[in-house]
Length: 276
Image (cartoon, rainbow, N blue to C red; front, top):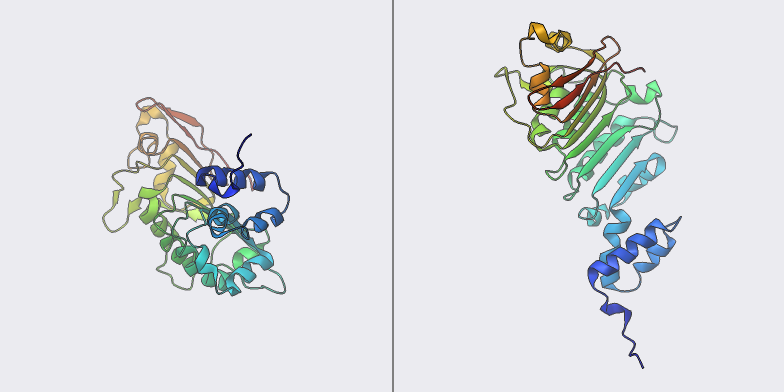
């Protein structure tokens, strides 16, 4: 006769896998919330599963900002997605983003962060200022290695003329693994420090760079369009980018480039036009 053993003796890794499968097979979080009430051990095992990936948008974004105990979840969140909306109850996305910045910065185990708009409503996009995004980017925890900023290609207003989003992104590039940008424009400051006019020496971790733009500000980007026989000058050559990024996409409404191959590293540089 087999001796029954209490369910509490399950190894922690097995318990976590059970909770993960429960989450995948449930349409709601009711069963997961019940796990929190079993014991302290179950609570500690279920919390990272429940709050590991969070999506904040609409009213649940404002509710999250109004909760005083969000700090207890700071170690649980690994992936955060923020979708801004403009409605009667939240007409100013920028003010919400200012309040959100400290919360995102406190997520000590955050690895992936995405921010954008719920749709292409121009009013929503105009409600976000570039300096607010700069503060958000610079305030991301050091653990964050995947970043998406999707502003639907609309222009971001400035209150501080000296604020530049490309400068902020360049400062975190060395640790980035995947970067996706959909902005109005960008310039060489994404890779080059304007004070020294030298490119970043190495971006060993960057595997994917996707930039979908309306305009390219720096004329040196145009050099990428030249044929390989003419050996484009300056840092923005296919070889320069291929040596740093495994998969690179840079496109705008005003430029269209053909697919190229860097023979030295055998990596693809596919630069294409993005249709808005």
